[in-house]
Figure (cartoon, rainbow, N blue to C red):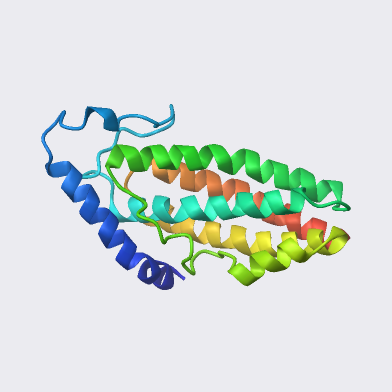
Length: 199
């Protein structure tokens, strides 16, 4: 898993690191407007201090979280979905939205750009376009079951990615977020498996 994850991210990561390196060579104070948009949880770590693992994790987890929110919005817009499933979808949105903002703040602090193209990569349990269309087309109980099946796989991918960060990451705040993701999403996987068995 780790090898495939690393290989999938190698090219965009190289571009991100090149951008980070460029930002570090500019004179201090040359870009005074760059310290905006980072929330209270954002780290002060510079790009030079953030490891490749930290940057890879953040740049891949942002689109991963964004897709989870898209999946949740899709199921929340449907009628006839079990209330326990909609409650879980709301819970996932409430947790992952702020985490996205925190991670974007870190990238801003590090001078790293997402540079696009990350969300379409096959990493960490990401759903394909056809998977997303299948969820969009499903209704009622079928939609609830499909959402749970897809989100279990999605969460399992996130847990694997987060464990890689825990094992090899350098920035303490990024590692702390990874631990939180492992804890919360492992618990949600158990909940979803129970829900799936009861539908």
